[in-house]
Image 1 (cartoon, rainbow, N blue to C red):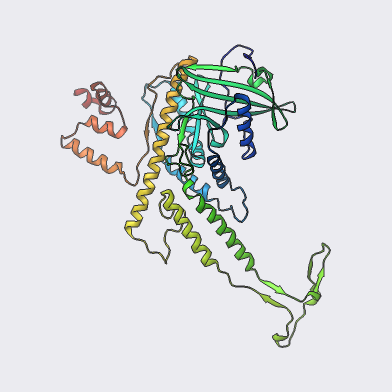
Image 2 (cartoon, helix red, strand yellow):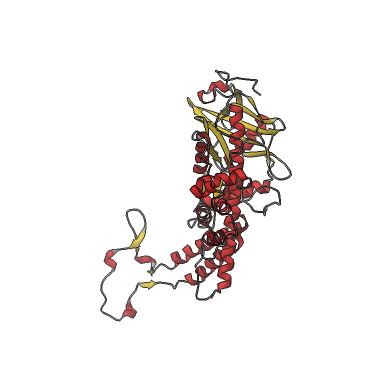
Length: 476
């Protein structure tokens, strides 16, 4: 194990961490095994995720990226379709607001977080969990999204929150391969970050070298303590689903309940492809009519084909074109897609056909699936709201440690998600205005509801009157 190796200028800095532009990429399957093995050798800690859960995470990413599998056609990429549609719907009307007096560093940090929002949500939908790492940049914070297959949980509490996590960056310099390993551990006094640099020896971890060996790591230190920083210093975005793999507190992919159906769909697609391939027209000819060409392929020669004025029964070549049975395969495919929609709480027609002649639908069924879909979207929006609050709190805590100004403790923005199936803000706003006109509701309270502003104290109500009510507000 390396001893203390302070950077050349003695400064204390965090590493860029995975997800930022750089050499960090972990290949699936073999790369995951390397990451777990390397962290265990470097820090004496191993992955606390169960073997069954690790296999499930690998399966989810295989489904999303369309990794080939025997007997399955992965071209439709239904998992990617589910993730894309959900992510676009979640952020369709997403908007964040800060008070007018909010400092510029806070606004830039929130803007960087919003820029990473869709990437982080897609990572979480695929792997069940995504980490957001705040990285200091120009007096504010940038954010890097870390996929579930790119970090190793080393400890969790009874609620599934991370207590320790390991990550790895790969570097290649002058033909030599290096691994920068980082372990983050939550403590009562703050966050502890341990960093080690190893020169890889083939597929083994190799020897530990000073951090100053690489220019990109020269400013890092082997151990860094950040007082006042809660948890592992990373905001966590998790899908709001109960674990259906091993019953643990680990988060699961949004399509984890339908993983079996997705494989069945891929098999059905492969069978449908075979049906069309088998349905191609064929020419049957006797063996003695076939001649090898220049490439050695046996085929009929052109001089064999001559016009026959005789009875067609005398023709020696027969064309065979079998009937296709695509109807049964397509019906099975639609049934599987509707099963996915039901399991995942999606609106009917997002994956399957909206209506089929064989299955009439009632208005009640349509409304029920719409409600389920709206609740699914709301759960995901709530998960992102929680991640935003964590990220902004981390910016405040890290800003105090690094001495960055303009990052107050009350940094959480107001989030507006727009309307949904169960919520019509235009109708409620019209009702609020009617109450104001009738003198049954103070206009400040109506405005506070519409713009999601604080309104608990008289000073907050006075601020609303100043901003929106003009002379009428001052008259009061």
